[in-house]
Length: 121
Image (tube, rainbow, N blue to C red):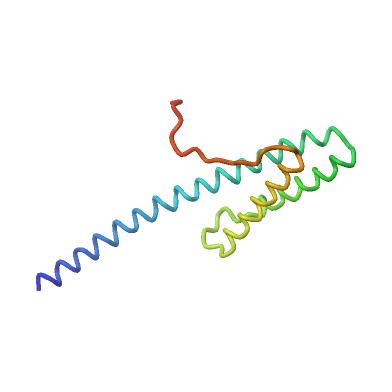
């Protein structure tokens, strides 16, 4: 009897703790992906605007690549965590970002800060 009661209490407590931990992990992972995608979009939009001022053949190729990156980001399913190709699409966006950076002669090392900023607001 005690074994059964202990098992049931442990199962209930473990389920509750697992749900809380899963929520925290999901929120953190989702925030990191959102930060990364947002950074790529801001980068692409800024360079797109800068390159529109100069219209030569080299810039038109860069603009097309930027248009492709922007389109991929806009089609990314932000609100559907059950999307089965989420990781695949994210890798395609990362690859396109690296291609654009190569075309623009820019380093493509995106890093998410692991510790909090010392700034407080």
